[in-house]
Length: 207
Length: 191
Image (cartoon, rainbow over all chains, first blue to last red):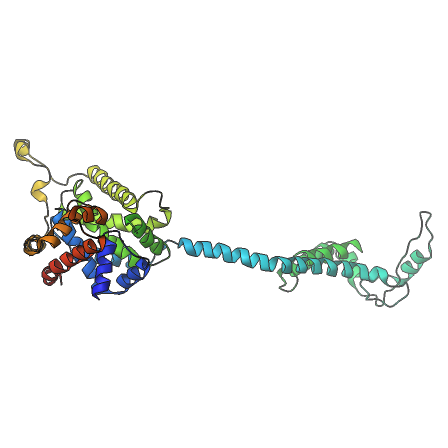
């Protein structure tokens, strides 16, 4: 203990060995060492005639109590912690960057496949029946040869459905339906971002 | 490790969230700050309040302290500004009492309204001073010289070693022993 007290005396005089950090730790963790530190300081202040008019033994306790009480006041973010957070963020970004790139690439590939798939299907092959129209009109279009070059008209419609009939009978229904689809895909948890927008655009292009 | 380095270490700990380190800084500088504020404000209770405010402001702003100056210089500025702001704020307020023209020549500002430190504290401080000086008087000459050269003359250990013609280790030991002897007398008063 005497050795520690001597180290404390050294620390007060701005001298300390390589274990100063340990000494500081011990002072912070030991109230008796703090009292001793205070008395050592008071000795010096009294000798230099620097003691205040009246020593308030509870001054530092009052300050610390106010600091602890002011929980609503944001405690200053430790610089070390900030640096650590920045380092951690950089590390996370460096780790996630390839994954994010992979995810974007996968999304683009999925869109491409989704849009390309119907074009790859052979005419006459049973399809999904995305649209329905009068079979008669389709067959007529399929039989036409335009001057410009090859035009392929898909006849892969399975069920007539009621959609275009509804549109004819209720003008503006298509807009409402589109708005509903856009809203639905935007709100959907599983389909966010570019993909739903691309699908809606693809849907409109096929009308 | 000099004062700057010791303070820098404590500041670094506070910035890392160690309030215990700030407690040590408060204990270290409280009397200096109170004395400084006392030059602006004579009322003891007011002085204590302003000094407390200054420390709390320092705590809140400590992340802005980058060590470009010494910690005490930075703290000194905060304390001085806090005291000046307090005076400015007080000056804006009306005094709350009226003075008769005939009595004005006898009026001494707020001196008549001062709230001095409580008698117990005044008595305790006086007793502390007497105890310390009595203990120093009783010290052996080598211890008394060492502690006096250090605390009053502010000499470094190396300078004291030259003056006393002894190794630095002896100086270190003498200063500690002097403090330890005085502390034994002082401790009962502050416990």
